[in-house]
Amino acid sequence: MRVNVDQQRCVSSGLCALAVSEVFDQGEQDGVVELLRPEVSGELAERVQRAARVCPARAIAVQEEVGA
Image (cartoon, rainbow, N blue to C red; front, side, top):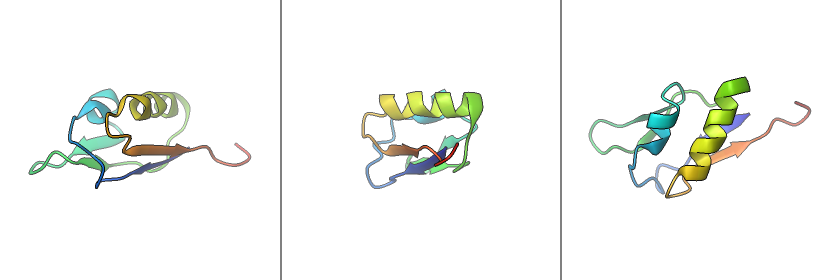
């Protein structure tokens, strides 16, 4: 699964970083999401999907890999 974030939409809630700290972090100055791993699979992919669903700004996009 490929993960993308839209930093312009991010409202710095931090829910993504709390849910999946292996994939998301927050900037120290502004709290905006930072993507640590653009490719995930397995249990991490499930957690990223949940994080995308709860993001209040809908700043996280996930794309399933074709043929996966």
